[in-house]
Length: 270
Image (cartoon, rainbow, N blue to C red; front, side, top):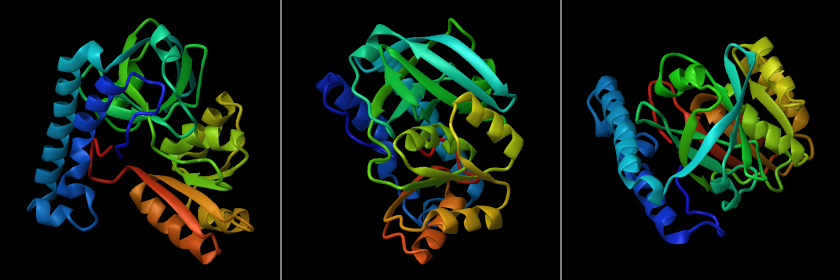
């Protein structure tokens, strides 16, 4: 998941960061069916991916102010123990160009890098919705982040094209981009493990989305919402993206723009 910087940002340093941080995307594990050829065991693959994520963090730490935008955490809301709504503010944000669906890559205190999709971006502020799940670096940061913390990141960078899409589907990790899609007029159907938690997070964003607690329920909602839709977006977990793509194509959706945020058994894939 690597793209060039948008116009309006300082071109040379950010282009260097985009190239270096995104270089992992060229490695074999990013292509379908290549994981087995790349390593002899899932454990080796997971270790290698973790080292790459940490390597990206060390690289960004060395490049520092040349490529990183700095912001301060102004507010942290907890609509549910699994979610944090975080508002960042900084003068550096005013100089960055953003559109719904763009991503930022955050250098965590652990020196790992994690990708987030801003919900909005105006007047030197942006809002992120963080999801705490498991004990990975991103989940630990989600639970630890506090007002006053300094956050450094690369981006915004192009990630998902939301324009022209009439429908978005995803999971818990897609709530932020779903909020952006809804504000552009698209419907959103999310397959989530914890419906009450996702409902609380959606309310905190003042956005209405269709939530389903099973694949079957989500697929039924997708078929209903897909009527008359020519273009859809599928994001989040790789397994649900595959299922959703099949449902959408069978329902007559001509274009499905897909972006995997995570895949079971892997870490730091973005």
